[in-house]
Image (tube, rainbow, N blue to C red):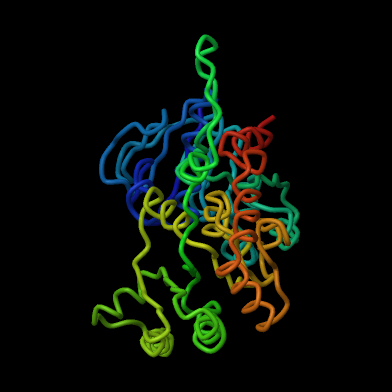
Length: 363
């Protein structure tokens, strides 16, 4: 199939996410392009990338480059206006990575009625929230390979002529990976429950585990901590972060996938407050794939990502949130069990599997 893909958001390409922070929807868009190309399709991506290039087998072209005149399939990310990017197309697809309510406004409804695309959703929960009449397919997003841990010792007998000598107990202990220190991370938007997490940390979690550290990953708060201006609604959260400095709270700007994967593996728990309109839970998917247990509220798409009691805890209130967070920070056995289950190979969701489902849209 000849597939064209359009996005008009921010400058990025198929290599960006590995080394630079990038929004979840944009990362997914790039990953799907590569997966479709690897599946044997001809894929051309037009977005705001700076230069024409090839990434994972897909051709990336800058926004002002010449557009194809025809295609078998057009996939537009988020914006219904992009559905008209190619004149002659057999199948038009609108990929909806977030809250689908915007599809119902007058302008977008008119565009959808005109182009009659198939809709692509991330989860059944998100699709059910759409409530419209257009046909749709649900393709659970994959996770890029940066977040899949490589387990050591996969082939203990590489040479049949030289069988391995059993290790004694000392050597076994030395081979075991060192468990992470009592470190928690939070990746939520500052206005989506971060204040509550900070208060729980300051009042309940850190007093019970004085050496525990909380790292807040946020671009806007990192700028604020560096003395730059932040939007007025963010200012109270910034002040609260500063007030929590004595409770081992630090702020860091988000990093690219490779570094963030290491940060997840160097932590004991991902504190995730959740949001009712957050169906994707992008960073939670990444951290779970890395083997990082989570403590989360059952909002939005959290239940689609966390296996409660196995890869994390989905809790009903503040007291439970603080208690199980402390358990993961202090109990090596609980952390190790949840880490092993979260990072199990059978739980891995790849973009190759997502690409297989997406192809249903033009069958």
